[in-house]
Length: 144
Length: 439
Image 1 (cartoon, rainbow over the protein chains, first blue to last red):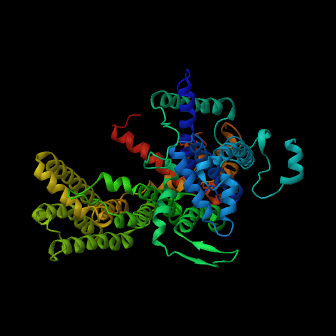
Image 2 (image 1 turned 90 degrees about the vertical axis):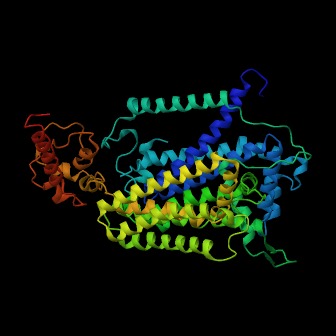
Image 3 (image 1 turned 180 degrees about the vertical axis):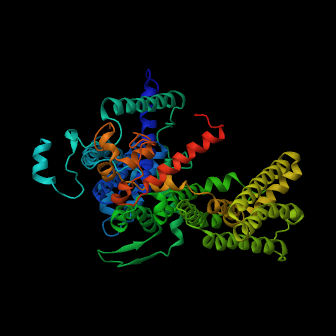
């Protein structure tokens, strides 16, 4: 992609936008936390926000699994081992998420591609609409 | 689905939903309209952000690398937002590891990976239950110092130190003593998980309560004096106990002693200041001793590093004593001096702090007699909030009758007329200082 005309800019925008998005989500969470804007009646909105933060981090993680370089391989290994460490359902969950516990086959790439371009955008968009809708209805909790 | 239909069915009268909402809302919050003013403001920020991203994309091409190759062994470092989890995974080997239910379908292995998962999940669980455990009404950081200090300690400091631990191999490789051992050893990095967040939390708590006008000497004296005592005892032990210093460091014991003095001096001054001086005097002594010590430390470092190779080697050996104990020898002086200053500094102006209590209920505006004859801007603006935010004159400074009708109805008992009278006297004082002429 770096070789086609202006491909490096498109790729760069995707990369930097991802990092800036995650930083912005974290900073937004800090602002809401420190100004107590999660308090009644905004508990649901806070929960949606925490789930959105996890979705955003998963976006980033799934994103750097896809280039299939050494970082992707290492990150997939870590992810598989962390998932397998879950009690009772660990192995099944790892197979569901990564397709194959043996990472050398590269099946995880296809599965995480689907998660990255379909599942997470669908979930993320739906929850963002709910999140912003709640702010529209309840009003912004102003910092005092 | 139209908003009116939804309103009728679900939300009318439910707590948390105002009577008016959505685009038909006419009880304006103070501020500017969404369109076109806020939209224009947002577009400026959007364009700025897009410009920054274009610039970064053009100038810093993200690394791609070759397709995965088992032959190439390189240090794998996740992206920065997952470093905290990786650091927690790496530190999880301090927990006991065992298996229960072996040979059964419910076999659970308490491995390092399991503990790492649990540690990574604890912040998420805390965030999810937060609104249900913090049911207090107070929103402002200065009025909720426990929550704020906890947040600074664990949202920020803990995730930062966990991220640092994830790159312990890089740190160990990069900074080494002349004989090849790491300057910051693994034990010191593990203690990073505990000591910096606790120090950050205590310092934030003391600083925030001070903002709320609480006298903090009861906290400051044990905190600052305690940290000073620990550093004194540790420095004395290092210098005086035979065999503590290795044979490579002994030739540089004088330099080490000088560094100890530079670290201890502002701590001793701060301890005396918080214990025995008045606040104004304490502020001056703490700031001056802290800044002086920082400059001397920097000068000594630069002097030893750039003077000669022998001195540079000596400096590295001095660091080999300071850095493994950096949680105490380096961090304690910094936090003692900073906390001493935060605990004795001037808090906010009284009236600004108290006016900030206002949550814009509008009762003051309803009862104020002057607003009945003065021209208002939009209806529903509240007096106290807008005077503080300077968004609308509310009751102009010189037409307030100081009748205290607003204070009588204010749920937070804000003494608005006291504020008006103080502001008027400030203007008079300025005019008098100018020889009686108007500004």
